[in-house]
Length: 310
Length: 298
Image (tube, rainbow over all chains, first blue to last red; front, side, top):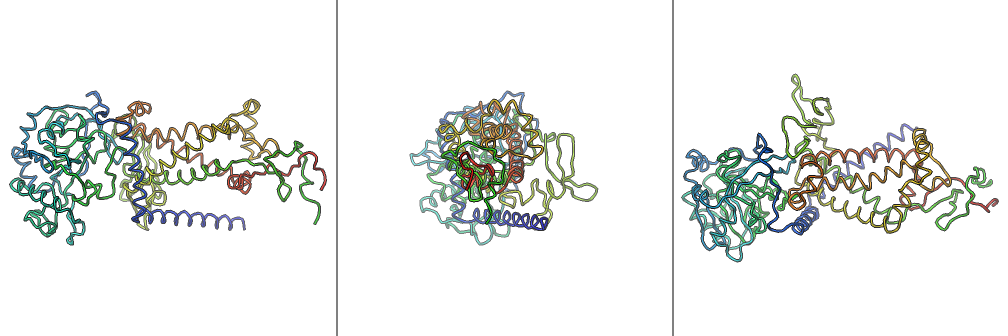
């Protein structure tokens, strides 16, 4: 009798627990649920920005603490043919494009970038998965580049377009979003400029043939599907921090392909996925709405926080 | 109807009824034990901690290994939960330093929707139940705010009302009779009457430890893992000896909280589950079949 009752209680508790968990999962999958869960991110961004200034820097470490192996994550060898061509030539033909809402669009070779003022910092890289590595990065502060390109007053975000394709869009182009006409024009203009060096910045608004949102237009697709490349974005608060650099060296040597050659972003106050590798183009925009799925980054489009300070 | 059973019980308490006391229908003497704020924050805390634990295990599953210091030493984790091929069959294993334990079925390798899955903590223990770090983080960080706000209300109320000091600081006689309290717990015999009006010394010290040490350490170690917080407040990460140490402390503190909750629930069950639940739901807690002075007959 007691045993029966106990078994019944256990079964009831188990059932209640399981249905609670299912309920939680269903809540998180609903639109209202997703919006509710996002409130925590807004609070984190707001409070952390209160606690630091634009100039607040991440901790730097002595070189003796450099990790013997800097774990490469995400793409470690981009499959893109245009990237492979650049890599085969040791990135001698690489040009970083700086465009969007700037007065003077730039096209900078690695030699150009190395000639600019540089900064070296030994910092800890914190992955969203939970692990950390310490590496010594050398590169050009993003502010040095942006100041030369001269931002237009509407510029709010720096979008880092990367060379590495992570997946191909499903054939129906369902991930495409309609965008503002102005963005389409600018993106198209950027594409015309970029035509010679490849189509970096797989923005859905930037169909190469000028037909905006034409999801069949792509030079690199498998089975006619559009490649989805990595991208990231940061706002001006982080873009002009002295530690925010476009790094070309890791631990005193040219950045290896697995860690993002020829250029990766270091934005030290945020998690690893914000530190985009294989950066090909910096596009200044006023809104993130027209890019990718509009959340500001490859992982952001897949549910991760845009603000990755925590 | 015969005489009330209350009259048959031993007459242990002879103090008059206080304003916060009443006699229950069955002759039990009830005291108003938990004020509304304490009851509310208790239940909110319970629900919030459950969400934080399960979403925390989801986050842990993204890299199920712990290290000491600033960085991850991938080859020599302090703790790792993984699966490995042992002579042809996949087994779930836990490495604690050099020691290895087979935990197939629960840790490292468990069933998810009927199929074997390589995951550190099993599907039934994580939120969401499937592997989804992004959603786990959203649950965790939203409910971390609830934990902090709820905890702040509890502490503020406890300090201002004097409840915290009055209820949780052990009194001199309790400290002197520490051994007696241990014996009480071992025999699962708990006092009734006047002595049941206050927490016993082990209870007081445990609640103090959870409220003032464990939960704050949990929040601080969590914050110390944030690269943004490390930039704003570098001393916080130093306090724990580095980001990976903070992550390990966070995990250990979570384990201690689970241990506390398990012991707490067992003691709630064995020391009168109905009375304890009524106390934490309505505030009224029975201290036994005892009569106040001056109420000899009925």
